[in-house]
Length: 437
Image 1 (cartoon, helix red, strand yellow):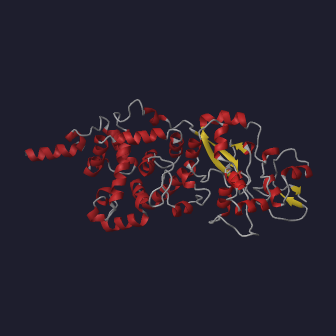
Image 2 (cartoon, rainbow, N blue to C red):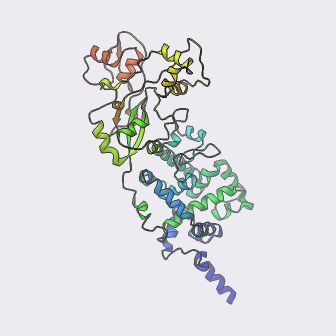
Image 3 (cartoon, rainbow, N blue to C red):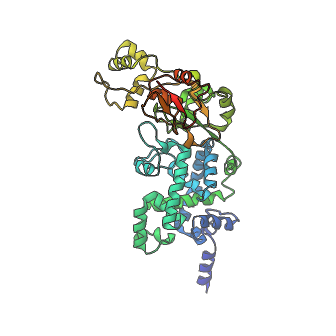
């Protein structure tokens, strides 16, 4: 009879309350609610595998490391939480990103997974992220978060439970499907038994780490006064988006709003070379929201490509090629200080330090700081892109055209194009006919 009573007591309360090594607090219902958000049964809170992680975090002060990581990311953390909050994905999936990368925007794994959500190149491209030598949107804080939500939602639709989506995110859909087939069930308690499911150890630890962090959020002792503000930052606006043209240097924008180069690069790691590619596209960059007034003060009446916004390199292409071939000369060493040499190589994907005479070279066009436009209520889909082909003396404006892209296509400068068409602004209307020759 005594043995039966002991067993009943043990099954009625969480392990931490028995061993006193981890205190779940008085609000057990809150803990159960969090588990239900992951479609995990509340009874799982007693599982030794989960308790072991909880206890480790508490004993080794690992949670402090996690909180400090969140604090270091407080510039963009509210924006991520806001995106999650507006989606169908539970807010607690923030801890998936924390587990993946500790919210380190420069994170790169030995498996070539990058960014705070740790996408590998193939998955990133499959879901529409740009990954090349110039732009890697896995490091784009906003875009990668939106794609992570889309990816997780697709995994949820396939497997039907959020904890299964988490596991699939880690080990892949095929590995999870094989584990479920081997176990004969998708119950979490069975899947984490390797003998029955063959689920990778990393994936078992992965789901338990995320659940543990989510449960710790409900523990008042975890969130002291130093970190409590991180929990209440969902509604705040932490970063603002600006749209810039090709050839914009991050350090120039940073300098104009009194922001450090390191912080500008941290928020815009998707621009790999510190300069937006000179391909006629426009790019989303991020600055701290508190810097918006400074940006508006500097660029209040400026729009991209307006008037003297072009600062085209005065040297012609022939001179550029000659200097490229003679980069060891004294003159070229001065030229190299302006980063033109490295940009020529990157833009043209030239692996060596020499090219043949007659080779066509794309020369990056550098714009001055007036080439920045503040992104307010305009859709990214409506931003100008390079388009248009050579034709007769007139050209009909298409969606995505800009004065600069048209001028470049027909080998005229913007001022000439504006003068020929009596244009007072750079704004174009789709369907207009422009005199180009």
